Length: 369
Image 1 (tube, rainbow, N blue to C red):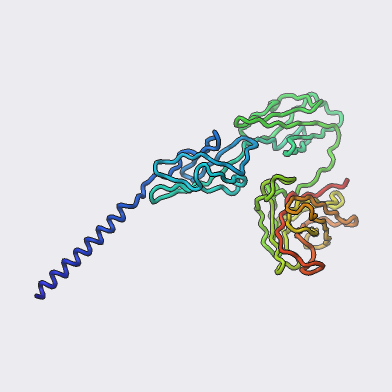
Image 2: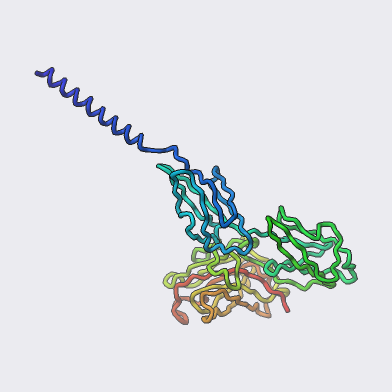
């Protein structure tokens, strides 16, 4: 009887192990870990993107002027695969150069992510020199202005030009050019053309505004003053007077935001501006609350302080406004530190302060007129 009982127990145990093994085998057989999740192609209109399966990136170069805010791509997938966001679903790629849009391809029990960047085809002249004179380039207007010494023969000039790698330029580099009248330079790049009008003027170049910050190619880091400064912020309104993609922002809280809450260019990012040559500052500001904006200027070591204020007007709330700040006429001390904040008075003085986010961009020192 005892032997029979032990035999029955052993049989039950073996049956249980067999069932468990069978269940595990069924679960394993149902998993498909070898499905193809490599995206085959990614098109915007008729433009094919460059797909890098190893890096998980897709780059699409679209014609200049393409509306990047509502791109509906065509996507080719391997059999049985799906993708999110779905093919043909409009997505905003306006900021994909700095924040790529992620697409995830699913197939069976596996998936892979692709970071998608869509850029407009763009070729630029980045430097234009005649002898020791450097041209003033206005990228927004596609113009270049060069001042050369009085008496220069402008009919046979050979400018030195830096421009987008891979582009072709006409007139060709090294060829003599007659600048008696403005000359059009044309860049050809990826099937697109970009024209610059170059004007040569006899005489001394007037002092130009000094660009201190623009968020892109001139972007010293703003330090925190009582709140966190977001140095790489996407421009919330690019269809106004400030179309550049990046700016700076802070959120100042009405409860905890007494005194100085803003951003500062100082220490490793300090400036060196002589008020005898530059007596004003301009800066682009965007807020949802009207009121004074303040700039504090200091010499090194936080000495020789002046507080400059300009009004952010109520009739342009939510839009970029260019504010001008006047440096006191009596100031002679060099300006090394620049502090920016959305409002200059402590909470409740003279009116209650409202919680608000301020964006700023395009800080310049303006020469004396």
